[in-house]
Length: 188
Image (tube, rainbow, N blue to C red; front, side, top):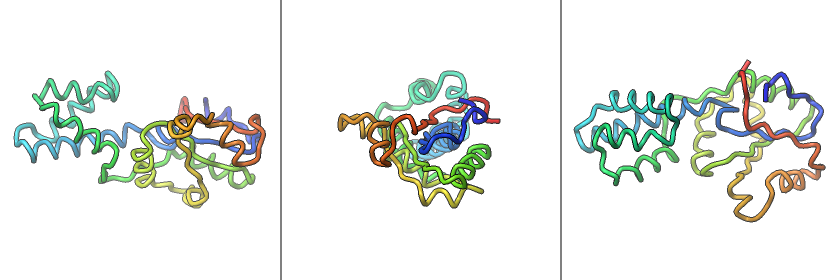
């Protein structure tokens, strides 16, 4: 969905976190560096910068799921470290703030100014998703963040709820008044 295609006709707008509010890549690159530093400190073998750069290249060419297995082969990482990697991904204390995409911040402000409801509906590990929000610099949309409710797709589906139906009911709205923004193309 292009941001320019989003109209202000709906009552409730549900935003995904990853690659909508900010670039997930920015978060993961910091995780890769932290893991490289942890591994270098623990094993004293690979250099954190080399490992992080390798992980970045794998991420960019093959996706996030390929990163640990490729690094494991390239650097001879014992499988026991995969749990550390996954835990770090979920709970990383990243050194740099994540910046909300400026066009998204502008849209959030427009929606708030028009009295629209805004919430987050996100897929993935709830601990990781909340951790990302903790490091998000909302910039000009800072006033919006305190009003946001956060919903987790996986949690709702686990409880046998359709996420959109459930949230529409929470806001006492018909489903046709809800717009889910879970992908942005051309971050104008």
